[in-house]
Image: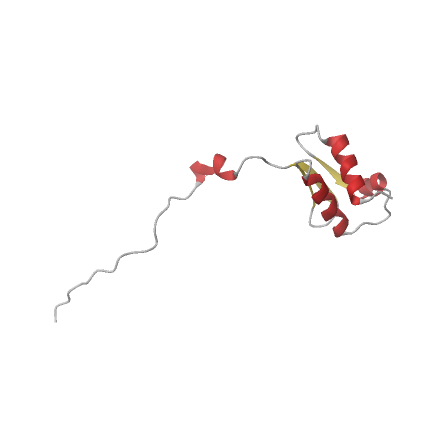
Length: 101
């Protein structure tokens, strides 16, 4: 049975050149790690260890597929400047209005 660190090191060594990322099924992880069952803590620890390689590892909502991907290196603002909402203030000055009586 491989620890999370050993499994992460193995994944990084085997798949670091796949820039598009890959997914693994529960069965894949069980077979490759030698574990009969694994917990969300195991996945979290694998993700932590892969972060040192600039990679991430997360599961889907149903815990059927797990995604191995390269972490982005550019902040969103570099690509998203055109899609930002215009900066308008929601603070308006109050002016005295004279009312006729």
